[in-house]
Image 1 (cartoon, rainbow, N blue to C red):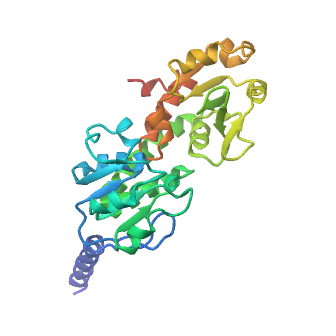
Image 2 (image 1 turned 135 degrees about the vertical axis):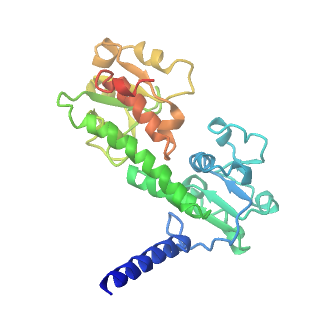
Image 3 (image 1 turned 90 degrees about the vertical axis):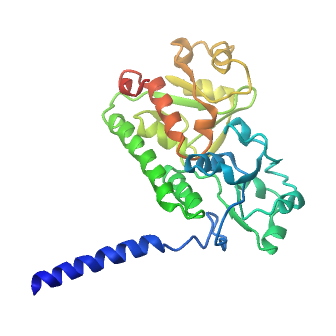
Length: 303
């Protein structure tokens, strides 16, 4: 009798597990905390954020896209034929005419208020995913994007794969005791921009066993040339892609010849898209960073 009871309990547990998985509640808030009501069926998607469009690409739903932002074609192939909108000044009337079931947006669209309120009032589901500052939040963004389409399991798989790669990299980083200092430029002279703590790129540098020279500051930073030279980084990374040779530009800067990274020619380009778009592709940037900073320690990640 006890054996039968145990079997019945096990069967009930299995049924409950599959029932919960099959009827998992759809998100009721977007990543900004705004209430949302997802349509029962989603066949027409507009993505106004390149990071989100890349997630949709990995989920295999690009065929459902009916429009994108103007930046996305630089990062996702095969979508340049779609209608395109400026993410900062979207044409709401034209967007409405496309009859989207869901619109993914980012914080870039809300700098001067909410341009999508009229669409929300019409019953269109608009979900906002602000640019995340931590790896943990990037993972949540991935899962949320997928969950809106009823694909939470697929989104979780993407996030788990990303985390597995990060764990493998950080395991090596934890063994490094002679830490190099790193400066990462996201904008070149005359307006140098970098970042401090509280950013996923700073987090990645730390996990790799290195130190961000601006970690004592917080967020995205405007850096003076004097402070950059004074920081004297061992390695300089740059994601600048709007000049022809960003590495060469740094190596040839007047007055930088005594900076360790320049003197030793330890200046490297890191893919702009992989390092700037907060999604699962940040792992690609992290591998590039690892091979640039500690090529011997991370040799197993070289292609």
